[in-house]
Length: 225
Image (cartoon, rainbow, N blue to C red; front, side, top):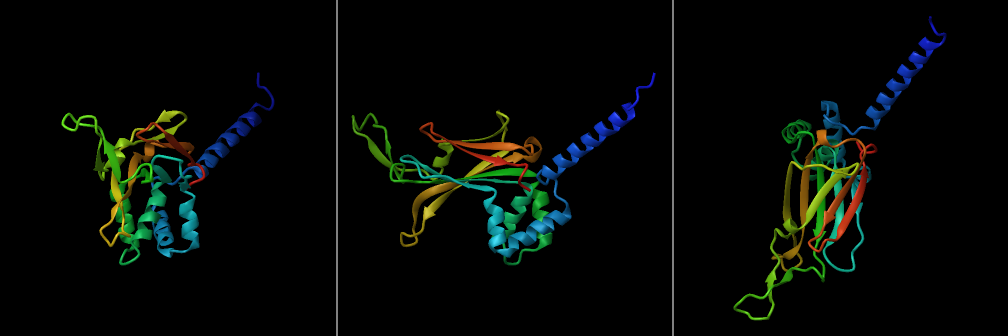
């Protein structure tokens, strides 16, 4: 026996399902990138204007200075599209859209977490070292190593599940105001993730300092391109 209206119900359900799929696609960040998207991102990076600055700020969180300890001043999460923009921004001379596309293909579809760590008066360039057998009970002092960032932990999670990184690397930041020689001022750290492991939903980036202090920043990847 045929139930009246069943066909209409099925059609309505199919329509709603298609709307949901379209909505999810519209809210998903771009990956993989089409050639047109790469070119668009390239030209946005070349602008060096307010539009570019506003775009990049949506991928970046500025954090308050702590009372003590190292300063996690910025946490940034870049999608594949935003990475093309950022690379183009840094290479404004002799850099073409064709090179941007080649660089994107070499880089692949990754989500890049960048953390900026700054030294402070309570976590400075000079650190105390534990006493040795020869020094008795006295504590020594030593310059903080350039790879001090390895004492920190960096995590990215979604829905309470930690995402495994592909790669992590860092570089020191120097204070160039000291007659050009520069002392250690901090570090920039990059953590790369496979874009296939990161969904278009809220992601939490977390940094844990050597003293166990946790600093977190949230990014809604459904609102980022």
